[in-house]
Length: 161
Image (cartoon, rainbow, N blue to C red; front, side, top):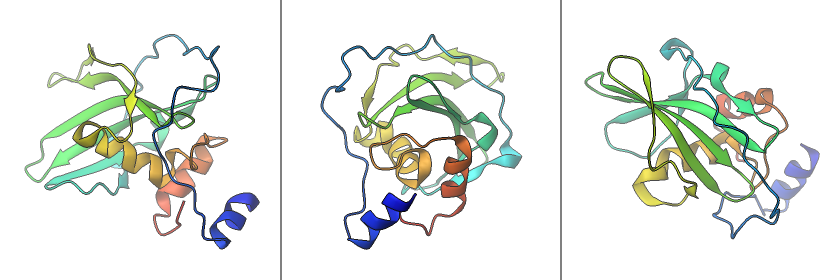
């Protein structure tokens, strides 16, 4: 935390950028995780510049896993009340996101067929993940130590990460 404040004081705030291939060639992702249950009532807003949609993350779905991936459920809601939930993971070190599953209308989860790792700067497909990473799921290109750190950052949008 102290180093983050020092970086901010110098005007060199870290930002999330897509990186080249991981510097750890031995990195291995853990087995496919199971999507956690989530609640609309617990959602913490994520500020995404997207017309007509509001995004939120249920903090109880956050995990910082041993493979360095921050996993979470994010929900997009339209003005008419339509919802879409995604179970995703972000690799802060490489600036990548992966969607594991989507919530169906019948409330079941469906695995995503094209769920490969992609850049957080992959245009419209990743705009919500990029915003979430900048607002607390990542600290620059580092993974936060724990979910408390992430929740504190998400709940304090005025703090410039």
